[in-house]
Length: 269
Image (cartoon, rainbow, N blue to C red; front, side, top):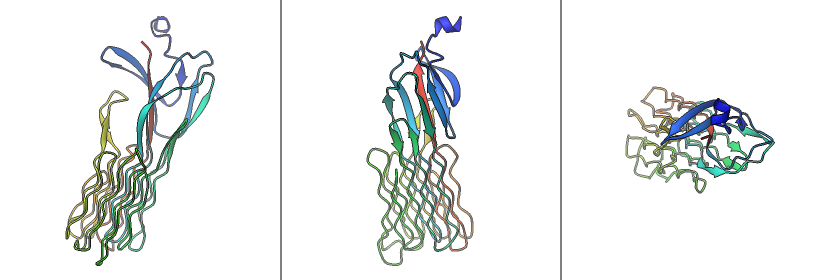
């Protein structure tokens, strides 16, 4: 019987449950794409469990706007208490700007047990600094003044790209979980910071990339993409914690950040 062969398979319950094999070791996986509960059996003698906790990404900025920062990216292991139910909170992605004169919105935190991953910083509007977060949002297009990218949370991501005084009509990329957002050059938005790949659920997936900065007439790059002149920016993919793309011009809207995800796994045999 499976219960005899894999006696630990019912120790935890909650989220979307699946089973994977890695190098001959079988794991049970619990994936949360929305807020829920992870329950530990009263008779559990299991510890520790592996986790990946990613917060919601930030929304892109308006005008010629910066890319949203990626949600905080945390992965390691921790011990759970037998007979305890843990609320698992999956952070929403930050909303896109509503047009010229508005920043994007910061992403929401994701939480599992003692682990809190910080939402991504907002992408900035024209002449505005990027928002702070798990990864920082990109600085908005400059009119002769340095516009700083948002700062990151230590150990969770990287800063957003700053917009130098000599880069016209372009904005910085949002920070990603593996690198800083890029600064723009004249007419070319900065690329979003790079994402991080993980196969914790059995599928190697890149998550938590920064949104590309917007620019007149060009595309940005990164987690959320950027915008063309007169176009609309790209929303980040749900449950990746990536940042939304910055707006391409005054009439366009930016992209929303992607919601986060929480994944837990443990060996069953």
